[in-house]
Image (cartoon, rainbow, N blue to C red; front, side):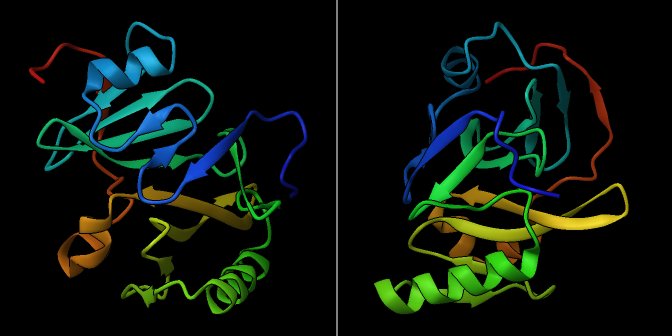
Length: 170
């Protein structure tokens, strides 16, 4: 698997957001930023999840955007220091993030499943299986969630059955 050249590229805004999305946005603001009227699917559970076209999933905490989880292959590509983070060998991305952290003084931590996070950037490195191959899938999270063991060890908070889009209070 490769990072894919035909993908949209989103800028990482450390601790603030990714591409057109900013942490703290309401569901309506997220839809507006993505230029859609509503998500393709929504899921309930402890955190509201919305799935959008082009491989973008978002999670809300108390009605505010708290996590952006692009799909490893179909989601937008995110570059950090000209290095593509998604859709690559997870070990290569892991080593890149360790080197980046050492060079820039970033704070590192590991989750219970040994996922690496750079808390000051709001990046949590996960892997996604696609076609029997594990590839890198960075998740972008508000700092409070990375600092909290409870939230951090439950990211990206997927696994709740997804339902068709239906209105819910925001």
